[in-house]
Amino acid sequence: MKNLPKPLRRGGFTLIELMVAMGITAVIVTVLVTITGVATDTWTRSRSEIRAARQAKVMLDTMAKDFESLVARRGSNAEWLYAGVESVSGMPKVTQGGGSSGSAAELTFMTAATDRYAGQIGDATMDKGGDVSCVSYRLRFEDPINGSQDQEAATYVLFRKLVNPDETFEQLLGEEDLQSAFSAFDSDVDQQQNFVCENVHQFTVTFLVEIPRGQQGAGVDLGYDTVRLTLSPGSTSSNFRLDGTGIETNLSTSGYTTEEIQSGRLTGVEISISVLSDAALVRLKTGGNRGLNSDDYARNVYHYSRLVTVPSM
Image 1 (cartoon, rainbow, N blue to C red):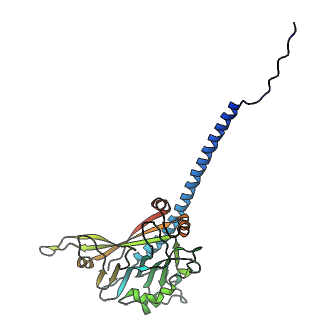
Image 2 (cartoon, rainbow, N blue to C red):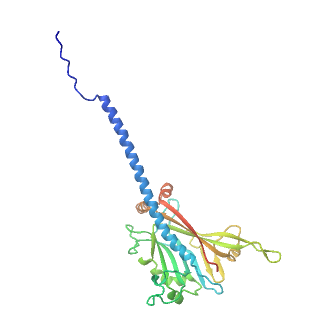
């Protein structure tokens, strides 16, 4: 019996098998790309948040330490604290519906700063005596290195100008208008050595004032109410002053008259700040002063606050 040779079958894949393999590969690649994108976005956001938290910590720690050492004395018209809103040129608009960002909070007050005389307290060559310094916080939009407003390098910069006790005694202590008296040092505020942190596009200060409820009967106190007076950068006419006679302010809150507020006692300060991510800052510079939309603002701006108890006057 004669066996016929079997035809040889060539090895390979059918068209259907190739299409199935390509489909599986495409799904795997898509999943990998998606996972990589999510991981990259998460890493970028975490990095921005860590950097923002670091900037906020530096500012809040520094300002809190100064407020904890606030110096104020009764018995004269000397001004110990001034808080107001100043116009600042060159600031880009941050939010699309927020209008122009051309103002910022300004803080100037007396404090027993521990870093006076460059931290060389007790050094005969540096320490010229005294323990009451004057400190001022200002927000600018400029290059922190050379002070220019060149859009390539400019950013939101917070400066802290500390006047040593000897100069404070000669030029600031006892002045009835601390804002005007400190103007002699305004040109030195944005010097490199006064740099605190960057990307802080806004900071607000809320003063906690304790107001007596009055008395009942034979001199029985009814206790106290604590009200919050917020100095918002939106109003350049807002101000809060503390002098030897008490509080002077045009800030108001519902349920209390100006006279009742000014008869109160300052007990604390709440500092609130908003920090931009680097990506948001780049977008502001290249966006034609349009600002961030609500979604971008929520993703790229971080908010921090701290409550500080101040010494009683």
